[in-house]
Length: 190
Ligand SMILES: [Zn+2]
Image 1 (tube, rainbow, N blue to C red):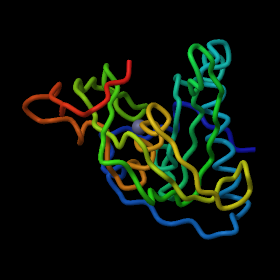
Image 2 (cartoon, rainbow, N blue to C red; image 1 turned 180 degrees about the vertical axis):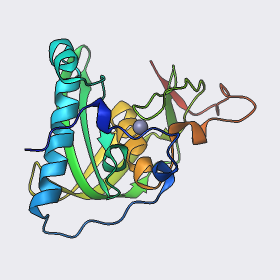
Image 3 (tube, rainbow, N blue to C red; image 1 turned 90 degrees about the vertical axis):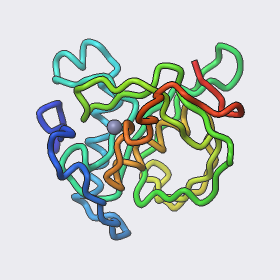
Image 4 (tube, helix red, strand yellow; image 1 turned 60 degrees about the horizontal axis):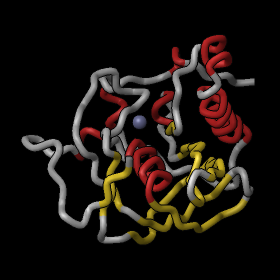
């Protein structure tokens, strides 16, 4: 079975990371299913310190196929979502051909900016994202085409990963001369 670790991660020094990835043919082939499952296992295990050490993983909430050298429109995310004060549920995504079908005008951003497994240099600044959005995709975990809404942190993670499918990196969104600038209506997430 395919197993992914840090030796598979494509860095932003590799121009292939700027490629636009190809749509995936459905139903999923056995190979594509295995890649997506291996990506999900990487992310799930990456936040367990012991497993991360043992299997050479870096803590991640999401991973897109181009980051492991597979230029297909597939991504995974494992996000602890705050449902009410101090109550979290873990939401897992294993998406194929994800598409943002609608979004808010309002933007949001993480107070400390973003980071990425494929980016070793630190790029400081706000990364503005849609505050709320609706996504359509085939979801491996549901094993069907799904449509769902996300907002806030979960939405940021999924937009970061969808960007990878288009060869876009988080620092492309940072204001070049005034990295911590924002609009009045933007929501800053701690
Ligand atoms: Zn990334």
